[in-house]
Image (cartoon, rainbow, N blue to C red; front, side, top):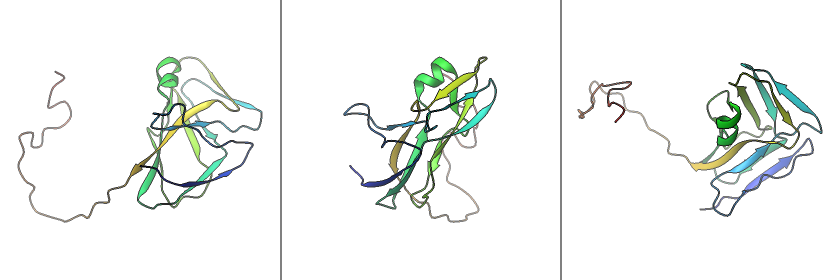
Length: 148
């Protein structure tokens, strides 16, 4: 499935690209107009990407996710877990990065800082009820199914 997405570029940004033919997400790059920023250990920063989007369908959401290499090797993850870019948002996409490492991390202009994918939306229609159906798990919560 493909989707047409109009894109507005600012801050010297270029259009995001898929790294390979089978990539699920495009890389988002820092748009720092030739500069850089340092994210100190235990701190967060909102990094601009210089892009704004207009998906040509309203039944999709753009999801911003961490880059696994940055998270695993450098301790750089998204401050908000994932980013949700609603189909009607027209502002610049910013990436909230968090440095969970013990060392400062420098982000340079053009660095790949996150990835963005488009997913279909399934909207819920809620119905208030007094009881829910029974399941084998029931109300078992955190850790109730074990680790093996």
